[in-house]
Image (cartoon, rainbow, N blue to C red; front, side, top):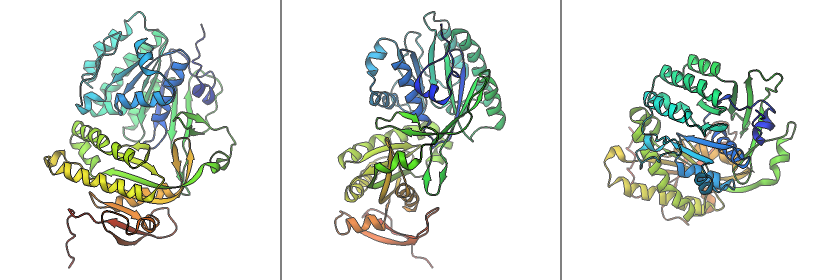
Length: 429
């Protein structure tokens, strides 16, 4: 029986390297395409008839199912036939509902403590029907918020040993730069293959890259960085080596209003109470998404606690942002302060380059730089947006002056929406 796992992404990246019984470790930057790639790997494995487990820490199970449905999979049928299972460690963090039991081995994620996982792990590996499957963890870094690094490493050492004997291909993942060097080194020593995902920004544009850094026992393999792109349905693929970026994207350039949203103080809240932070994050997403649909915005992606949204109309974008802030203001007025959420929103109008579902270019970068200039609960827009919406909005808009934005050559005049409920700034002096 062939040992190589033959799915398109793996075979394009490193033919013959990815095998049953192997451990793959992914180290990824927060803005990389790892999450999209994890969905792609699951979809391609299922299309190839390979049983697949998807362990979600960072995204609600409904989002995982939606992503796989966009990749033309009948998720409900695959679950019913026990070809696909979601192991839900997201719900237990947020407290939003009850995690489902994963059949056939009855795994229910009710804790993120390694000590609680140990007995359940042995139930999984003792299930006689379970051989030759792919198991994908989309962000194991979450575990170190609930366990010491030593406890996490000890658990994975034991699971590695069991997985090899059963012919499982495990794909684990760690966020880059958040753990001790010793933790990364020890984790890498357990893995057969180590992949890196990164998204560097150069000259005002972002490149999405991946590479094989380590492939033990695989002979020759190419460790060069490979460029990634997303297709229209969200699937991630590798761009052929030597393909000019302009050839891939220039025909997909168009004018758009780009919105960035960000939760004020989310990082510090996560440090104080991760469970509360994740609960509020889930509620925040549920509040915003209906407004995107109402104003014909296209949700490009979430980046941590932020949204990147594309609009074809500057007025629709600003109206959407204003309605969001009005809704959140009313919501906060009926909640205790520890459960309230405030947003900053920035919007810019300009040319964007499309690669699949993603967007790039100066318009995206400028919008992301304008967003932090908004006060909590506020909306800031560029001069280009203001020129399109002047005298057309529900709330007045005033100039905040001209600013120099990081990595943007020309100064930008920034405007802000004035809401009737906002606190007036104190006079200086």
